[in-house]
Length: 578
Image (cartoon, rainbow, N blue to C red):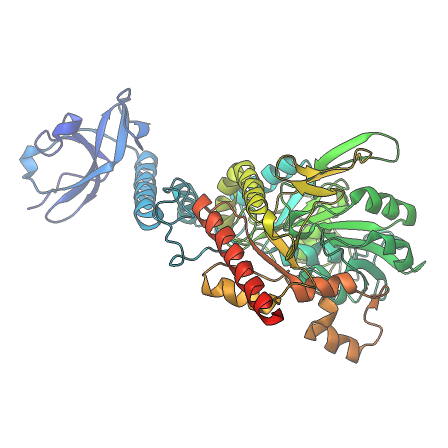
């Protein structure tokens, strides 16, 4: 059976094969014994996932990608009544691919608790199903956008990336955003940009200059300092807020050597910006906010001019970093960003270090946006050397992929909901665990004096500063006199299938990489005073999850199991004493 007269794009009439559409269909493919076609109806009739188009004769039609058929009919049963042009036919084929991607996503993923729209608590089996500390939360929209971007096959950073950069900058309220492949890379790029010879000499970070940071946290907040030949100066951490002990700031300064400050908003809890900002201005220091764990956190204070200032974290310093690894507030699988808060010239420096160190700022796939591509003379190169291959920095290649950015754009739309879910989950755990205060000290936002079930966080009457964390996790500091250790609690949670983590690297100066580095280079870093807070975090801190994929049943199970553990160890302790 053959269809010699038919071609892809033909609008055919065949009531026998397509009775539900009035007999109309568009031919997609013609084979030796059958044809493949999608039903078509006149525009105006509703059809989910249908694609509107005009035929060559001007018919306004809607194609339904859900209704694609293989047709085995005699050639004389089919009449060609019109044609669809090549562009419309290509759009239809794309829509069919996306339709079936959505269908696959629903069937393959919708039973998972991290699927948006899944039944809330019915699927969870306490003690059998794991309670992750973090994970990606998504549905078919992310998968459709990823597939759609891949179909275009512009794989490197492109239109989706450009759009996400603008959308994220607008969400935060910063001058611009530069995407990269991880939050760790974002910190590396932010620090590296401040070493650029394009900056004035008195502002530029140079080998041997010092950068103030704190001891407990994630290693890649600090590693870029060392990787750029700079000297980290470690402050201690407050074990309740997790943030730096800022009373040590002035002691950390070394005139002529201290050039920058980098602190993370630990676990989403904003550090005391009302103290750090004037300190940086007083001493002429750059400020980098590691905002990887705090997207959506807010901070309010009265500035030096007496004006009230409230904004999202990541918008107060000169540069800030974001991470889009799955445990974070939104995900691209892997990914991160550097936010340029105010100074536009820093964007080119960050992009240069991200893009091999090149001097050219043209996006991938575009040339000569400066209109002077062959007119530059830099370094000792001959005048007219191609600007795309002039390098002003020792850079990297740290770009993400465009399909990742496509996922990120959908996630960014969900971000306000994600933020509120994290806050609600944190408060649910805090309320449920309030009876365990004899065993744990619970994290408090900067400037809060306590927490109560009735009011939430309590602030001193005279305190004008407020922080509103978008929590990364729920941290518990085991009290020194508790009748159990962190390893004991960790083993119990593992057996109960409850995900948990230490506070990242704990006191980083105790980590083997830092110990070995200082043995080799005794002046590699400085420590201000002792580090009792960072050591307490190292030895006694542990957190569980608050991410939006956790259901109320999961959170209640975590509460129930922690109470059970504390009852067991308390009974054991009493038995030993008696």
